[in-house]
Length: 544
Ligand code: NA7
Image 1 (cartoon, rainbow, N blue to C red):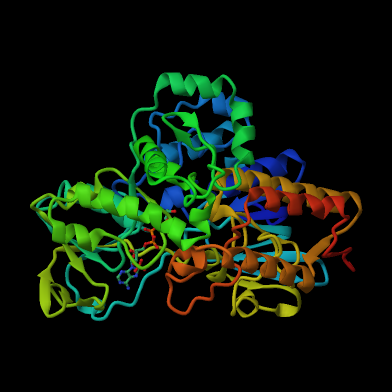
Image 2: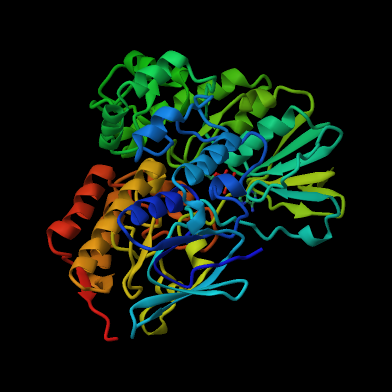
């Protein structure tokens, strides 16, 4: 049930995932009266809503965790190299208790609108249960992979079987053991759920529109010596992690690796293959740290793509099935690599079949799915169709800024932001891991820590100066979007229909969704906000 005890605070934070919990802890420490509102019945955000079988994070546990408290880092013991959803949820609940956050969190409470009042410089946040909370500042920690993408499949309303969504999995275990199951979607969620359901279902049929590039995650119990070595010098380890422009301090055989400074095309084929093999064997996303030109040059990119295509052919017994699973037509890394735990081998099982739907729309019948005149009878269908990423969760709330302007209108041609943290015309509203930020290609836990620090520093400075309103100028927003567009256009990323660039959703504008210039440049620009005396921002004090 919705229980809202506070009615007037300095800061409302929307979302109780990693970013929201971090912001609450940090802003409260600075003396701000802050509260979190979240629609879920537990803290956890993404890791609360998503609970499908096989779900785990693709960044190592020792990295994908808070760095703001060394006590927390030292005392928490991760059981696996890559944490499962259940362990991440336990961790975030522990954090909520450990830092006494719960007293300032309203759960079961969905925010439906946020409306800014120009006279008082305050937001009014309205909840589904009809509560209203006033706040000087609004921090949107709504998650960048949280708004489900539910395509309009023809005939779905007549389908009589069960439907499951990876983005909203039931609490209780679903038993697929004597069922004919279909899965739509072969991105990270699909790859994880297919591997698990394939172990159980009587028959599993996978409907694949675009094959992904998958690499073995090589998850395992966390080696005690590795944990000990990181914990013996965690601060230094974190410092280095923050210096990696894209992603964390990814390990190869538990040793940190950096991007090689050479071109993929200037080394011999043997040297290149040896590097790719080394990263592949180490597991996880280590293949992100190879030659820099795989991100900018299609010929260089194709050397890595071809290496991974051959791996698929080695792992899948039936050559025809293997060819269907081999991605072509878009650059490797253009979509996020999927960390797999036996995904390709699933197709070597007698109870699993693959249906190619790249040239054909899926149509539902009462009994199942019809593709190219063939009906597949299914007791259950699992939708792993991804997210309206980055901007989606924000646009599902009725957000009205200065003069009643609507965010939906302001962003109709793209998610316009300054530094991925604010948008012109919506004063005192901040985004964590939001559109226009480096979150998709950096490490979102570290990013939300840094962004919470920036927000805290900016509003503390304002408080000290008696100011109550901050917003970026349209000029600053234009500059940021121009810079971000220039950066991404020099890379291979626009060539893939990924959620990074909004091309996974028909008609969604690509502009401004993610920043690909790296954390170092991003951090420099964020630091300049205070050091330049808020150049590019408009600040003022309330009239009443
Ligand atoms: P993704 O990576 O966006 O994958 C969604 C999948 O669903 C992908 O294979 C899509 O095919 C497929 N899809 C979406 N709509 C359709 C329709 N209409 N017909 C057939 N197939 C469809 O989302 P995930 O949840 O797997 O992963 C998101 C991130 O979470 C991931 O990158 C990690 O960072 C964690 P498409 O490729 O669009 O042809």
